Image (cartoon, rainbow, N blue to C red; front, top):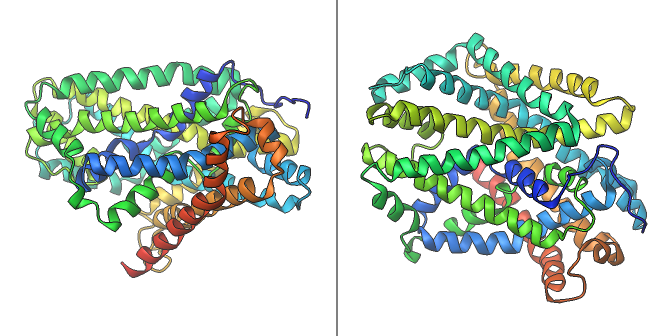
Amino acid sequence: MQEKLSIHGAWSNRWVFVMAATGSAVGLGNIWKFPYITGENGGGAFVLVYLVCILMVGIPIMVSEVLIGRRGRQSPINSMKDLAVESGLSPRWSLAGWVGALAGVMIFSFYSVVAGWVLYYVAGMANGDFIDIGSEMAGKRFEVLLADAETLLIWHSVFVVMVMTVVAGGVSKGLERATRIMMPALFVLLFILLAYSMTSGAFGQGFDFLFHFDPSQLTWNAVLIALGHSFFTLSLGMGSIMAYGSYMPKKASIGSTVMMIAVLDTLVALVAGLAIFPIVFANQLDPGAGPGLMFITLPVAFGQMPGGHIFGFLFFVLIAVAAWTSAISLMEPAAAWIVEKFGIKRVPACTALGALVWLLGIACLGSFNFMSDYKIGSMTFFDLMDFATANIMLPLGGLFIAIFAGWKIKRYALEDELSFKQNFWFSAWYFSIRYIAPVAVAAIFALNLYNKFTE
């Protein structure tokens, strides 16, 4: 099959793709969720189980997404459609691309609200608002923020503009240029904060929390947590990686490239834990505060440490960069499809898409104030968007991709895209994507729904 190029452009080299895909994978959950669930579920033992899940579930599906994207060289919707037709299948397989693109838009609608909170805290840290603040005052400040629809709207709007400006620039002038600046900045900030945490006096305690090897804590629930996180942490099921894969150079090895992305994503999560938890322990604060760890616990910790307001500012800049790189990838699949479908340029396509997600975001931020009484069952609009994407759309998208790549695409197309072809690595990937990954994602899907409706 003669190579074709995407109308949207291409990454200049493999490393740009690695950094862009890592930026997509590294988000808010990497900073607070993964380190905490690691510490609570056996430390080093949990990390080993998680790595096995990454190898058997996350990487096979990610390879499939990149493969489909590079083969199709279009938006996920049209790539799925063209590969289905090439394999003699119904073009309705494009539904998997639709599920992913729609999920990305829905996730961004509430993700931008949370990212707006982060930007608010960046400004607050820069102004020294959290110096010597106590837990009660920090909690009150966060409550006041959530109740202030006008402030939330301002920061939500700022974040939408930040993201859509990058996406509107296209692959070379938008996505790649942002990646070349933001990803090195993210790593520099992360290691500055790691060095700072080493001076907290509780670095050993934080290290033990993350890496103590305790197999007795590896319950079946812990294994299921590792399985779920191995899927969600790599931005799978939403078309982002597929869209990025469509800009990947033909000569680049998909397998080794995806392995590098998975390693970097895990490394960032673990280093973030080493940067955060020593500071938490040094101030005798709760490491299990969940999202409140970022917006209540850590501001208190930074506010009470020498020079903490400076490093608190750097921490929230780090979080903002991670949110920014992730959000860009959420919007790319839908933006690419609009350009292809209507034959328009990036700027008007992204303006229209940005207006849509901005309006959805207003409903999400309203869930904390003026729309808090409007619920579907027990869920606000924010909760509904979160539930529908995390528990239904992303697992379904991942399941469709695993079945499509493992059972539907013609084998010659797989071998043409994967440089390892007929050897052990191809056989291992092919077995995983056919038998292990679909069962694992179906289990995630079923268990998430079961836990939601029985909690």
